[in-house]
Length: 337
Ligand code: SF4
Ligand code: SF4
Image (cartoon, rainbow, N blue to C red; front, side):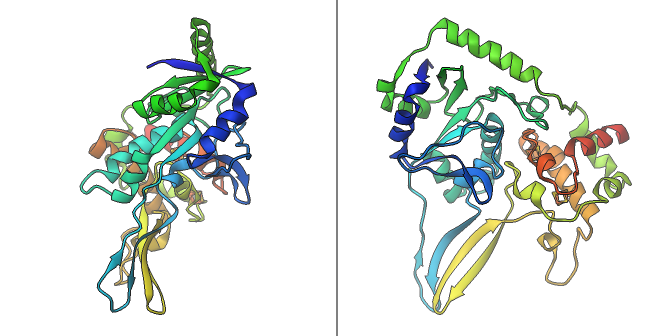
């Protein structure tokens, strides 16, 4: 696969050409920086670490209608997604996260809603020249220029962007905007390698994950879970805004005789998540819920899909209102093991 260069003077033309393809990119909103549809003439914000809400929402919406029906009727109306989309400026950790949850959505049953959107979406990544304070992607199999999950990787070389094709979907997109691009030379690829080394060197936080998946089951009854969850207020931010979290609830909503079945993001950090109709709750306290959160990412998912379901984006650390830090938890897990 080849690489091309885009002079930043042509950036608005580039965005304009993509805008007709249902373009999503980071823009400031009332809820902070997040991926939103970009209309022609609007400028995405690429000067950022990562968005508050991960771009998974473009393929796994926070709330979506699975089907509509009429009370007493016999027919279902299924609004299956069929629109092409381009996500521009996806950080490598967030693209890896989608790649990781692809496994889940195509595991025992294919999820047609998620998989159709994934198939029709082109992921254009943006390498991280300046990783954030709490990024630790390099500890969990990723990196600031990782291409896993991406179709095209953009690297900011200063006056130009290097566009590296990763998949055929990425190549097809390049073909459509070719008139704006020039061939990349050896020098730009050397510049990219240098930036990649420098960016990896700027990542200050890390965890040695070896031994954690195998060691976690032995800590089931350990007192550490009470310790690390003592200040948790159960708000669910850590899971709601995690790019690999994928739990959802399904509810029927009715209005007169019109009804729809929807699914919406849910969080295992909420008490109601495991509350049975009988009143019994197998995870009654935040300690059990924190244990589940860590085990799910660092043990169960590894058993099932052979990959850690955490990409080290740092969101759960940056956004936890009581400063609970997954790397501190994992550090304590390591010590107990
Ligand atoms: S964000 Fe922090 S306080 Fe909120 S549920 Fe997660 S760990 Fe608990
Ligand atoms: S667990 Fe935290 S660091 Fe890991 S992917 Fe989720 S939000 Fe990012």
